Length: 527
Image 1 (cartoon, rainbow, N blue to C red):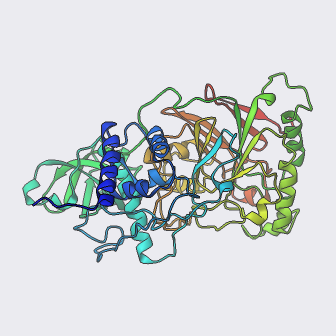
Image 2 (cartoon, helix red, strand yellow; image 1 turned 90 degrees about the vertical axis):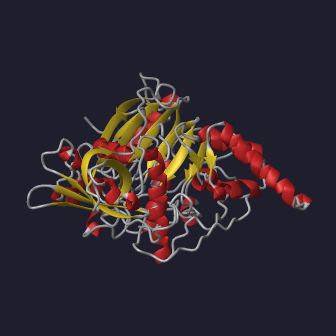
């Protein structure tokens, strides 16, 4: 006998099928939890679907919860519980050998609303905050948080790698695979070099662990020197049927092959970071020259100043207090709030009509654990109301051009771990972030990362611009269509930097033509 469902349930199931079919016709699959959020959305579902589809990377196969939540009008959305029970563990990263990483829900258990001021600028603005941590932190520091965090990292990057690698689960590499070539995707747990010079990589996936051996005479041996812990990679090699794989090739998730700029907009954007207002080394004279140029108070033969529509600041607006040993000797302003008042005076001098976006860094008055929320409201009140405060990291769009803002503290870890990476060329470290599709791939080193249920550092789709700071050195490159820009500093060399042999490049401003994505450098330091 045919089961007769109540009318409300029939209508609900029909809507579900219609949404799933819409995505399927465009070549996308939809996570059940993502479908649940869309169905519970109280606003226009047509507009929400259009936003999700228009922003999806063409190579994405599965629309995940995080890709939906970034586009929600969270002030109008209903809170949706997506919490799942965590099964008994066999390891911290993947505690259940029988559960599928793709069927688990690594996303936040609820999505609290963001205030309208932190979600977007005024309705007529062409600046929009797409996604950051502000108001959405789920971390309490317990065991389950770490499980969710690493599951989410693995799941997202595995999806990217699966487009180019036909992999199998580690648990399937039994005796029947002896002598056969197999491929797998795993998270790097450890990297060692044996007494004989071979490199040994411990890899883990949701089903188990395996030892990948790269012999010193292998073609990929030199390339394997770039492998770092906690990243997710693909490997192909010969299985010995007993828990070891002799590696023949390596695969990183990387950006899609692309040479032309990924997106085009209009106007010019200035990229700044590391002002360090409050330090006695803050270059006030250079900033004043910058303001005079920007506000049309001096001759501008280039004609660029009048075309500037955006300024993006990637952290360390002030110098802070107690950040490094002996910092009190380097401060001109001892009180942190007085530092922000001074910073506001300098920034409020920027001519109106320019949209200013401000993200925090490790010197700012936010939690030190990343990802960091936007500056607190009692600090924001010092600044003009038309400035947009975002978290670290943050995705924003400028005239339709996507910009991924990250202060860049993970550059410290990459300089320590990767050969050929240095503070003098920070753009190389940023390219390594893009290759690994992760802003901070190494966990538990210099960068303190809070284990959120969602890994906010995964680069799920290519940005048009990756903008970092932190290292006080200007670096500009283009990598597979992405403009890679580190924006230097407005602080001259401190005594601490001299001891650390850090040579800053101050008062140099990268300017991006959003129509062509060409980047130039403007110099405001004295000759």
